[in-house]
Length: 252
Image (cartoon, rainbow, N blue to C red; front, top):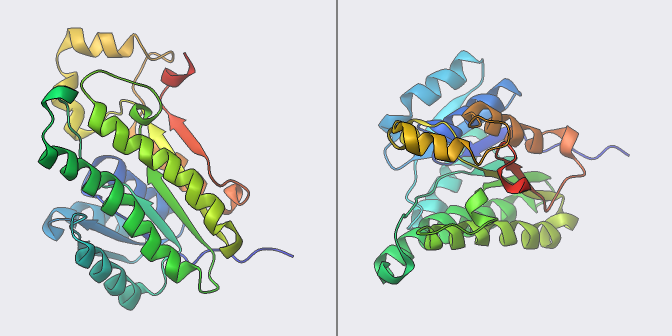
């Protein structure tokens, strides 16, 4: 017997640019109506236009991952607008580059609240409650190679992303019988607008490239393609997995 497919409504958090925007467009190309979020919905205009240009319905909604009430309101608004969510991509997050001995508790809480608690666990749990009502679904997290290997001055960020890795595995096991698949991608250094300044310095750029076996940085489109695969029927037997998209960085 062929398993039922997830509903064709997808929700992508943090979709104003970069991986989130490319993912929203890739899912629209795959036939999904797409709801996108950010703190300010005005910044989602380009993403929404791109979804509509692909012939799919698009909606931008506000989301503050530090507030559970904001996550609840988002899920309710999404369901009212487009019906049940079949695919959730937890992409939104924040970073912190700081020595562990200098990190403040407020900085720790900010990163954990955005990346791990609100940005993954609470969002996934709320979506899963709807999916578990007889509707299969897919939840995909955006982790990082920082969650797979250690790196100096990124301890708090790495811990949050490592938490996403382990949560992906745990939730995949817990929700498998409900027909919910849970996976994550782990991008390395990806060419995004926010990385442009960091990569502009030639010596630093070359040092980073020297660590990547394929000799170039992965693109946001390549990460989005991996996410679209995990959301597709082609990945129907894939759950609890972390897919690095890093040009071979973690193969060392």
